[in-house]
Length: 305
Image (cartoon, rainbow, N blue to C red; front, side):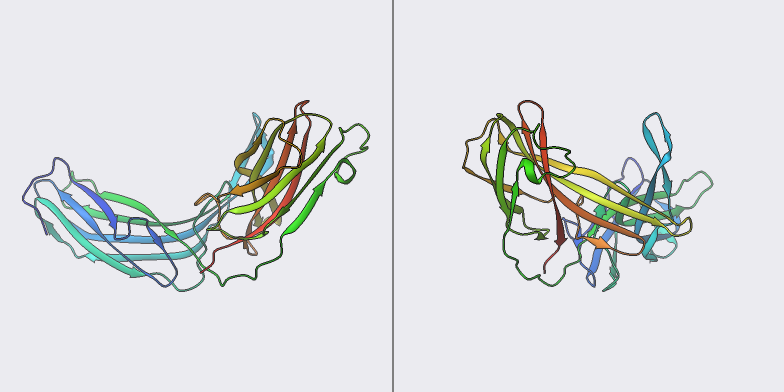
């Protein structure tokens, strides 16, 4: 209903009923468009555009300039595209009015919201109104909402042990020049519910050289396929780095690994013909002499019900 006060400026604002803006396939999205009409004005109708798409980019190393790779934008994958007329042409009286809206999300073929470097899955609302009068410019507002796509629970696997020594390091010509050390541990799960932390434990059994730091690094691996050009680009980028051990830690003491997956920057592992999003966790042990040992673990993320 319009209020009696007269706003300083005319504007639109989208408000969703859910404060967290999180929805799941098949659910109903409800909210309203708040219209602030200075002095009142006629309009050609209030519309709401609903979009959901996967934006894809390819890094082009051959076009690198000044140390930065150029990027090629590919045709997005459209999952949702609808336009709703939520108020017919007419007039908004001076003051503030709320126009409600409601629509249902498809029950399938939606990917989870994800903000990556070369791949982004976004869902957006755009409200717009054409005002009457030659000098009146259109008004517009946009708001992103978040889609989570749950899956059936996976079977719990046994904890997976690992061991890192100079003898089992990869891509090393000789182990004789590497300081003697022995690192053991285990991962509690490599198939990980995204709403629960990544956990495990690591123990420094011995090390000839003092240790400076022990860190957990979360990495996303994004692959984009350009079918028209017959090219596939695969890029790895760091999401976050957490220190779990500082300084020359005590030997034979169990150090817990605990990492929460950041919202939006991670998603359930996605594999399609056009793109894939996968994740890895690197355990990094940095020695005081600058030498660093890295052990990588591929993990499979999913969102349980």
